[in-house]
Length: 145
Length: 145
DNA sequence: AAAATTGTTGCAACTAAGTTGATTTTGGAG
DNA sequence: CTCCAAAATCAACTTAGTTGCAACAATTTT
Ligand SMILES: [Mn+2]
Ligand SMILES: [Mn+2]
Ligand SMILES: [Zn+2]
Ligand SMILES: [Zn+2]
Image 1: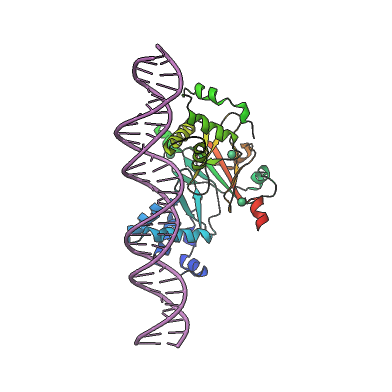
Image 2 (image 1 turned 120 degrees about the vertical axis):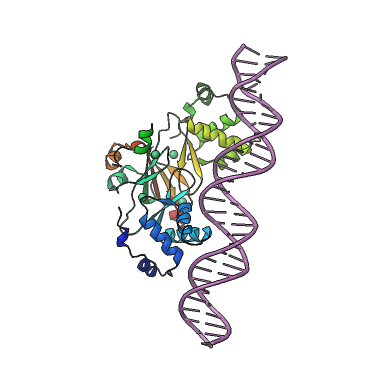
């Protein structure tokens, strides 16, 4: 799932009618290079290692990208949102989160047709998306125990 | 999914070696009577309509119940945890959350064997639990639109 | 070129949800 | 009834994110 090199972030911003700014580009590049979903604070720190930024700018950019469907916000355990790129090469997929170290791993996308049929909600609801999170103990934490 | 009348909360507390206190009992009764998962603030407000309580007490009780497996904490959209009873009559199940009104509905438990086979995480991880959340537009919000 | 418009960033102050440590109160065993 | 570990309270703190407004930058208009 490391096909970010295929994405032209400058072009993506242009196609969204967004100006190419240093912070926007940095957010996309950082998420594109990440192997798993990142917290806003982590993104902020990476940008700050290069240039001066205010956290509000990063939060506003992430919010905007999420609304446009360019980035996905994951609700995992705890009160901290995690963000990952939602480019065409990265379809929605389940995640694994370790009880102990809280690390998040992306799992392969699953065909949801089978799951859909199992999930008959109250009639009249319109389901748009299924979010799957597997909880457990990651291989690193297993070795330590 | 309204079998809370079968649960004897006083006995449950005793079997857990917990003293029977007004707030503990109230938390269990409120969660037992709820038709969907509640936020800590909602639980607090219901208790406060009857007696004086500090929010810390409620948070500490919820935390303790979650650690003991008596209550489940749901990580839904946003930064607010939702809590539901995890008594023997209420097995883990998926949830539906409305984009618009954010209301949470409990869905029927699904047999996860089919889903398990689809979710092949990195080798070496030990999966303990699968959390499924369906997002969409609830029937009430659909009517309004 | 100057001015106005628009979009972007920065700053400070704020909020919501939950946590911590110290102190006081209470359930229930003896 | 007495006593004390367990439970509740209080105030202060933390974390993650939000809000309103000012400053700045990039275009567009005159
Ligand atoms: Mn992912
Ligand atoms: Mn439920
Ligand atoms: Zn781990
Ligand atoms: Zn709704």
